[in-house]
Image (cartoon, rainbow, N blue to C red; front, side, top):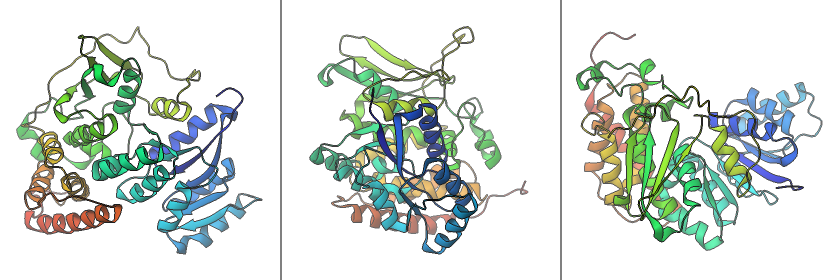
Length: 400
């Protein structure tokens, strides 16, 4: 990247990944220019980002917030107000901004799917941090990228690690991919104790700072089920060639085993800014002075098999991938409804996989031919998940 400036746009700039992405942009100085930002309802944070990075285009969730955003920009002394769009049109405009080199897809949920698809269909490189994109529509998204000659660079630490390791060999030389996971906060809890898990406990990840849904997904191991689906579409391997191991230290982010028995692993501190920097600067590597392993403190690396009886969401992820078609989309929608219900104390922690499995069992996998098909499937699955939720009832016990 010597002597060049890479132009980026961010979908989800006020979320956890979006904020860290902008930290990377600041740390790397003049290597990047921010062309467009899309955010939801956090207008104070978005206004500060606009004042700092001066994008040409901004998108927000709804039209009724445009006036409030403009007022905040005036209060901050922003002289050149960006173009402000909203809703679906706004997201798609940010994703397809003409001068953009890299689109960072960091929205939470299915809302970022269409915009990410449009970015890839338009030939943009996408730094992908949104799990739902490949879980719900992996085949459609990867086909669009292939047709347009666009690149998907994974930002999730596990897939980013695999991407780095795979640079050491050719696809036909790969035997299997090994995704690692911390096991979450309940790794050592007995199964019976999971009945008493509170939302506050589930949101206390031992190693990573993340959004609420992904933190709960880490606690249930659903995030590993999602990552198997993502890895299948990102790297083109058969599902049976993708494995999961529990690694509580979150220091070794994933591994590739080659046909000769060699295993390559990527190690780094558990900090999302590292995979973000890799994706933003690929295929180059730029110096980073803030992220280094402390080898003196790295006393051990533990590995164990996941307990799928205690954490059945991992099994559900594999079953959804095997069913194919609409099932991964149904899985994602049901999980989001279940996690929201748990955080609202409407169901107990073990009822998360119970709700998801009931929704899957009631659904027949069908092909999804377009993004509109995916969005329709998502709506239907959420509606049915809401119906199942009403039948599960509220958990017993005093609210805390």
